[in-house]
Image 1 (tube, rainbow over the protein chains, first blue to last red):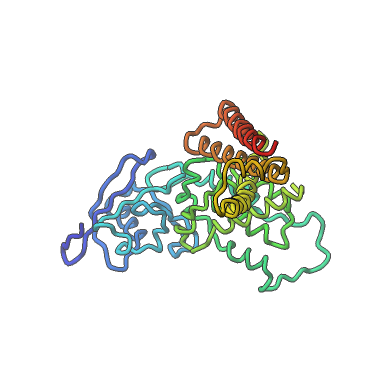
Image 2 (image 1 turned 90 degrees about the vertical axis):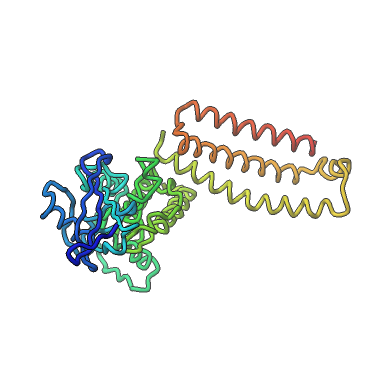
Amino acid sequence: MINMANNKQEIKVTIARGQLGVDFESFTVPYDEEQTILDLLTHIQRDVDPTLSYRFACRVGMCGSCAMRVNGKPRWTCRTLVRKALQDGELRLEPLSNFKVVKDLVVDMEQFFDKWQEAKGRFEPSESPVQEFAPIKPDNAKRQLADEAIECINCGCCYAACDVVASNPDYLGPAALNRAWSLVNDAKDFAGPERLKAVSGDGGCQNCHTNSQCVARCPLQLNPTRSIAGLKKEVSLATLKGQI
Amino acid sequence: MSNRLEFKIWLAHRLSAMALGLFVVVHLAGMMIAIQGGVSAQEILGRTSGNYVFGLFYSLFVLAAATHASIGLRTVAREVLGWKGWSAGILIICFFLALNIVGVSAIGGLVL
């Protein structure tokens, strides 16, 4: 519902409070046409209820820390205009799904990043010094595959949108597997078969149902489903060849 | 369970699906050709009896179908029902064996 009061539009915002995700509190606040949801939250915390907890850092879509569910969909609040997210004149803000809630809209990202490490999402250099410089040209096919996946900033939107993560908490998830795929295609990385083993354990890439919710919800329009399909193919070939 | 076993089961599911894709096309094409002008049970048995290539083809078909169906049911049991224990494993193995026995028995009836 949008009311006009003192020539300024007002909006009803319902926000999840506490740790369990079952308590909600509604606020009626003014908003401007070009206001983001993060601006709205800042107004509520500064002027209405200073106990409201939410997370942000860069405010310009670079850090990914302000991600939360806006009317049920994971989004970056700093890059989402209130007027574009409104449903029936109302906003419902909740913490990201598939994460443990710390308080209000703040989630614990520890398991998310643990899975990133479990998928060997870390660059592994050669054990011995590399003797010759290896140029990787922009038109190199593997470099292009890595380029498609490399821009992920780990906001967790894909992980929150993934229904496989929801039904199987062991699943590594789209972000970790997408990161692993970018490294599989990095000619300077030497993890090789060890990374392929890491992404094909019980919670590995084979669990992906290719529902593409991660693709639909990635604020950067990345395609983790395609990265995971690439991993499935690489691991399958390595398995059939007896390399892992 | 070995952490690589899950992937190998998934791979077997995909490979059996690929094999089934080919088998089903060959089967349907064979059926369409075989029934041209009508065919009796006697004629079918006349063609299949002693035809070991036919027997081998359909034995592989049965194996692929049993593998694919069993792993598919295992996935449904795990993801929909949350049934992952040894009891589910035993039931799936019994289902796999039963499909193979029934299928191979039918082929034996036609070929031997």
